[in-house]
Length: 205
Length: 378
Image (cartoon, rainbow over all chains, first blue to last red; front, side, top):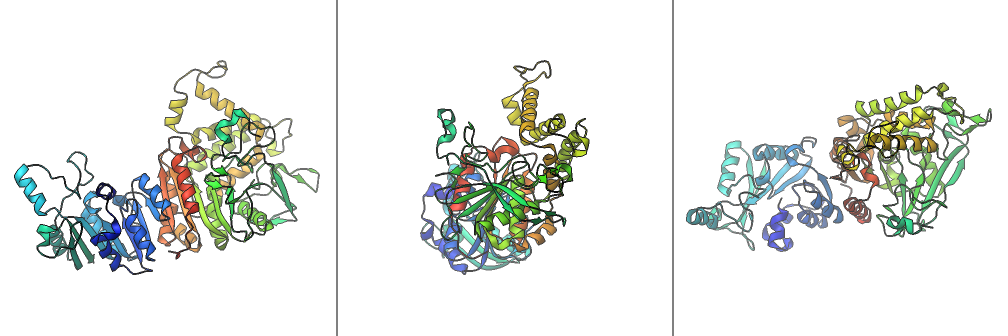
């Protein structure tokens, strides 16, 4: 899950532009489901804001840390754990750097659109220029800040770019409400598919 | 007091404790029959604070009793949950007032088949009325009310204790703040009923059974021992049995069994007979089998009335109460937007895991209890 990257980067999540962007989208009292919530850093920020947040995570070490933070988490796998949730029972469903690690992202996104009024999806942008040039120049699978794994030990099963996701939403007739792109320290507005390390989409059915 | 022999337990012990008995004039069971008087055996650890809002009710499993922590005078082994109850432990007696009661229908001091029937001066035995999990909880409610406690800080239990905790949350939704359900289920599956049925049939087929009206000198001991042996297999796991016994021959009774696991089970069965009553075994296993809050949508409807936070713990190696049953409870709570944390621990000891020391379990119980969430009800 995203825990590996956050740990590796040692980032203060509160100051991260993507995290404050998400926190600003969600109002106190709204109900949120965080899929692949990791150690619960984002959930804690939302909870402190008065958001009613719960998470799902498959790593038991993470669950124990979430309980320590007084967060509510379900120990389980997103790939088989969402069916019981009722249609539109959450104001937001969040997939924060989770979607690239699921077995069947297309199905999971549709399931999220069913149970959430809006869905926030954040993923590492695979078309960042450094990734492009790394493949071009070294001919090797890139290892980056946001994807700090080798081909043989990565939890990431899928690699996608902002443009890939736009195409997916077009094809599936999913409405994109907001799109935002980031690097470690700020929002990227110019040629984001080339310069952003992280892509964020807010979608609804 | 704990001696050097009890080093592994002596850290943070509540020390020497005594089981007490409280008596109420009468108690009407769900089935309509009245127990007169109602007696409940219980122990307490820690101190009830002035606001009476720091009480945790601990509910025991099938063969448990009110002795959850500390030592009885002269005992070498402490109560069954001593790993988790005591000063500085997960159920911290410096902070919480722990109440542990023996269930009614049991045989460890609360009203049950061994109670003397005032009408004829003899024990009720199998003429004692049917007791449900709801009745056990109803009796506990009288006990905590007698302390002047309106709202429990938490109700916690594993296995049958978990069912009682769950029942608390629906029977008295406003009277508990936290509910901890471990290695448990919202109702028994056919497999769980099947195991219990074999146990009961073993008792019923004992030559001394006499329709449950046996004398203490001629008890259906063999049948009860067999029931316990059967039960004990389901409490362990394949991995644990392999590690502990493998195919080793027994040390002593080679005449009666060829394998160490067999001699272990025989020992467990025989020692159980000394501390448990066959009628109680039947009453309590029936209470377990009849308990049903439903599954799926039915369970979701039943749990719509709960008002507390939940912690649900399951164990990967538990084949008696498999994790899917815990997840069923969790999903129904989630649909009702109840704040719930669910963890499946990978402890190899099977169903009995909840009783054994585990750092992960310790930390999750401790942190769940100490995170005082006064925030919005989800």
